[in-house]
Image (cartoon, rainbow, N blue to C red; front, side, top):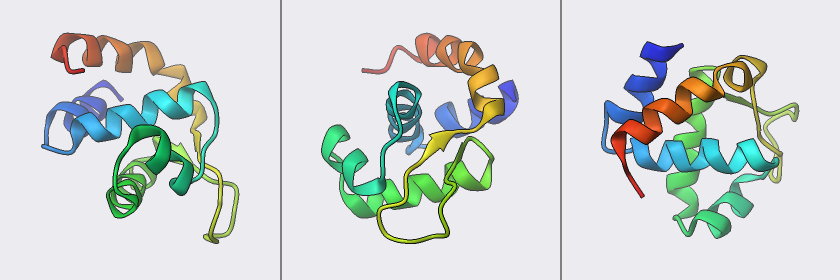
Length: 94
């Protein structure tokens, strides 16, 4: 999981936005529109990063791909949240 998180967070220009989504979802579940508002990011940007995070089993949604579905961190991501925080701290990104 550590290598995957390094790739997702530090390995591309979208990493900081993905990290912000992970941090937000660690606090509570959100839907894409709420994340867009809370993080002050474009809705399409949020949707793109949600797709990447879902494909890599970092976040999940119990819904059936409908508007307003809520997103949560996967159990595996919750178990590795300390690893994520260490990576995020090393990057020193606001």
